[in-house]
Image (cartoon, rainbow, N blue to C red; front, side, top):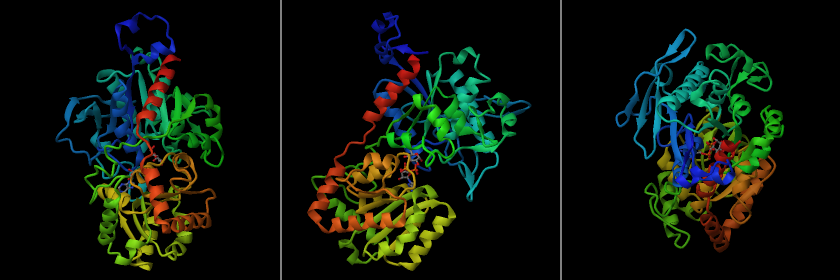
Amino acid sequence: MCHPASPEAQSDVFLTRAWYNSLVARVLMVSSEAAPFAKTGGLADVVGSLPSALRSLGDEVAVVIPRYASIDLKTAHRVWDNLPVHFGPVSFPVSIYQAPAPYPVYLVDCPPLYDRKGFYGESGMDYPDNHIRFAVFCRAALGIARVLFRPDIFHCHDWQTGLVPAYLRTAFATDPTFFGCRTLFTIHNLGYQGLFPKAALAEVALDPSVYRPDGMEFFGRVSYIKAGIEFADAVNTVSPTYAREIQTPEYGFGLDARLRGRASVLTGILNGVDYADWNPQTDPLIPAPYSPQDLTGKATCKRRLLEEFGFPAAALDRPLLGIVSRFTRQKGFDILAEVAARIVAEDVYLVALGTGDPEFEDFFHLMQQEHPGRIAARIGFDSPLAHRIEAGADIFLMPSHYEPCGLNQMYSLRYGTVPVARATGGLDDTIDVGTGFKFAGYSGEALLDAVKAAVRAFADRENWQRMMRRGMSMDFSWKAPAAAYAELYRRILAR
Ligand code: ADP
Ligand code: GLC
């Protein structure tokens, strides 16, 4: 239930927008990742930082994620002992822990399902029981809503949480606990859909009626992301441009028609940056602090990064390109591969950090062997190194095929590391001609042209520093996006 912020608000019997704006919304964020507890990419950054921004606007927020093996329970405490999830005759033992945080962060503990090396799979293979793992997770989130944190809004993120709206529309449609509860489904990446054989429905106790074209059916399989898209009260994605792109066949991953069908409840809200973590003036993970007023620390960061990777002293005067990324097809490494040798021929240096598809890990290994002292790659997930690259590089490369929002280009802007990026999704929304270099066509040649333009601009040091400073002073904080979410919650609640 909603709680009026003040007694005056209570006396207003009309559900006007103003009245709703005065309410405190209780939001349960359901996500498969949240920093600092579990992170493979930007989803974790978003779910790790949006709650604080919403709380500063007055809303009450709790977060629920699975308790993976990598999450240490030493500092957590058990808040619910036995919340088993039953799927017909099969039941899963679930306990709920609460992690230390300024707001409730619930960890769904179910060792047979989550006590594994990976979050979603191992050695490039998804776990075969992911449909069960994330169905149990969604049901546990509903259990938390029943006994630990009663929300007005379930804010669900990506396919792993699509079953929350599906269960609420079916098995729990008449359960008074959830009367008045609304759901928002945020698409962080349409490329990951949670597709399973039709038989999965029975295994996770979903009503067979959901298997229909305007439900979870997707080309003969069941789609968890489609459950979120079709059954949530509202849907959003993480940039205005991506919200438009996913309604086209080129970026819709087969879901564009259904997304067009939901256009009246589909919006784009650009992600924010947590400048407490990503600020070169205060970042404890970089060798020297710097600011738009005093860039000397950035030169130190570059020198130290070059030393760390064993690059020659001559590199100091040449552009240093940085990449920090999940290694997947989405990120445009196929077009980078086409022109990598020609990029290097521009007398530039490249540092890449990432992990993911073996195909791209091999590519970066090979590049390093072919261009020793020019290209260096670190395969793995290393947050401190990500900060050092953001601070030490001159240019940040993001040739993404598609990019729902992208956080790294916003971090780069703040670190005076000029982005060279493909004009798609959030990249297009956050970079302009005064702060970076964008290219439109998805081709190696277009990428190469953009890199060449950046290298030419780098030669004019004064102009380059002006560009750095412009980027550094842009504000991509959570202030505006959190207000947009708060407003969206109220619109959904007022419906
Ligand atoms: P995506 O979510 O598609 O991976 P984003 O740009 O939104 O892309 O967010 C990526 C986040 O993950 C950033 O915080 C980035 O620094 C981090 N990251 C990605 N790969 C690595 C890595 N190998 N090591 C450390 N951090 C990484
Ligand atoms: C996804 C997208 C990325 C976005 C992130 C957080 O992983 O690929 O563009 O920034 O989610 O929303």
